[in-house]
Each structure stands twice: as C-alpha cells, then as structure tokens.
Image (cartoon, rainbow, N blue to C red; front, side, top):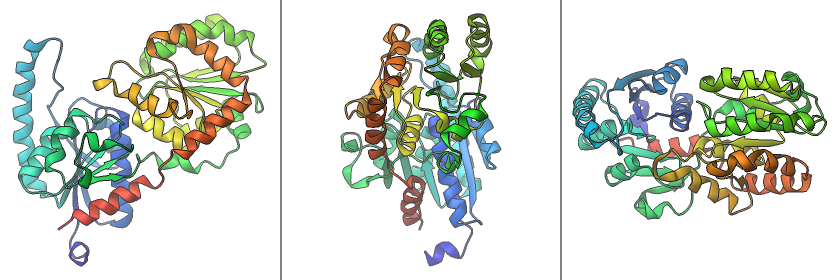
Length: 373
C-alpha cells in the first residue's frame, strides 16, 4: 500500500452495453476516487452503446472499441464481427501502451472482452465483476486469467474457480439509498394521492415492450380501481408516444406516465409494489431497498439469465415472477391481487431485504486494491 500512495493510481474499467453493466462500473470508479482522489480512471466501452454517453456524464473519460456481439442467427454476418474484433484487440493494445494501468476491472458485456484479454496478456492484474446469477460468456472466458472475481450470488463456483470468488453483491446508484422523503411526500411529488397504494412500473433503461403492452391492456382496469391503486409508469423513450396516446384515450387519472424517471430514489420511495424486468441492477436495487416486486424476465438476453435471476428471488418468496409470454394475460391481475393483500407485500419486503448484500462497491475496491503491485 505504501507504494500505491507514492504514485498516481491508474485504473482501467471496461464493459457495458446496458445499465446493468454501467451502473456498477461507475459505482466502482466512484469508490476508487473517494479513496484516491488522485487516481486516473479510464473507461473502455463499445462504440455506439449506452456507456459512450453515460460514462462521460458521470465525469469519466471513455474510449470506444468497434467490438460487437456475435450474431447467432445470421452466421454470415460474423465475418464482419471477427474483423471488428481484430481491430478492437489492436486498439486495446494501443490503449494499454498509452495508459499503462496498474489494474483493470471488467464488468461484463462483450465490450470488456478484448480489453481485459489484452490486459491479462500484458500482465496487468484483473478483477471481474459478475452481476448475474448465471455468468456471462465474456466473464467465463476471462476467468482463468483473472486474479479476483466479485459476484452477487452464491453458488458461482459452477462458473468460476472457487479460490478467486468473493461474494460482494452488486453496487447500485448511491442516490437511491439516501432518499429522505416519506412515501407520502414521494407520491405527492408525482402528483398522486399520498395515502393510496402505488405501483411503480419500470422496464429497464430502454423500456420493455411486453410490460408496456400489458399495462396498456390494463388501463381500463386500473381506471375502474381508481380508489384502490395508482401507477407511476416509466415506458422508455421508444414506447413513449404509444403509451402516452393509450393513456390519454383511456382517461385514467390514477396513472402517471413518462419516458424516463430522473428521480428514481423518489419513485422507489413512492412505490408499494414494483413491476420490473429482472436485470441484475434492478434486482440489487429491490433487495437493498426492501421492495416487493413482480418480475417479468426478458427472454431476449444471453443464456436466459434474467429468468435465473428472477427465480433466485421467487424461490425464496422474495418476489413474484410472471413469465414474459404470460404477462399480457396475468400481469395486471397479479398486480391488483397483490396490492390488495398487505400481508403478502410485507412478506415479500422482508424476504427480499434479507437477500441484500450491502457496501458492495467498498468490498470490491478493497479486493481491487489488494491486486495493485
């Protein structure tokens, strides 16, 4: 540690593609900066993906690689994918030569593959952070060369060497954990009745078609139950106009719709029940905040890992799960039935809070600093 304090620390952070990869990466970087304000942190992501906007907005430099995921349905397209992979490996070597990191962090997603592989070949100590209960392909490929692997679920020895694993949980946005508003104050901030049970509908950072269509189909039902329930509905920007028009046509006054919620701390505080996809970040937020939820796993993800994430909670009565294919028929009815039973809400809250792993970023950075030569 004495050697670390004598020179500026250089940390490389790579990965992205979704908020589920980006939020933990930024949380880790923030914790490094909190401890070592002089640290030089460089992110490496995939060109055209969400991290290229979100990381600079958080105050960090980022370089983009032309890496793309393999197309498993149209195999002929992978000729171009392989060409971009070779370009990305070359660019990764140049980044290593110029930046000279002391340590590298990989948070998953195909963007981290070339960068972390080249870092390992160059002898840079590497730490992987795996958010899901079913490990991603990139992290599995990188595991042999990594010095440490931080995970959010027990039983990850089936994917990674047991002696490298540290159970830390997933870092979440710090702002979510420090909301001082009461549920009543939070509901009033959204223009809702302060004492009425409230459902928060979120579909991930880009929205979720199945969840949105299910809510559209249930707007008349919500309108009829105006005295029993109210809804905060984040649709994602791609579904904004469709959902807004459907809500206006329904005349439901107990539903507030928006493409994106900037004050998620207040939205969670307002919620009695949350409807969500089962991405790793969303589940970690529900656990840390102790929120009852109905999870609708996305079927459009690698290895169907969202279903495995959701089952990890549902099997412990820490959440309800509605499969994507059944959401149109069951989601609104399940929501109204659950809201009507406060005892069931309380059980879900107790059980999900018991699964929370706290201070994740701190534990990850503890291990990261152990790796620095």
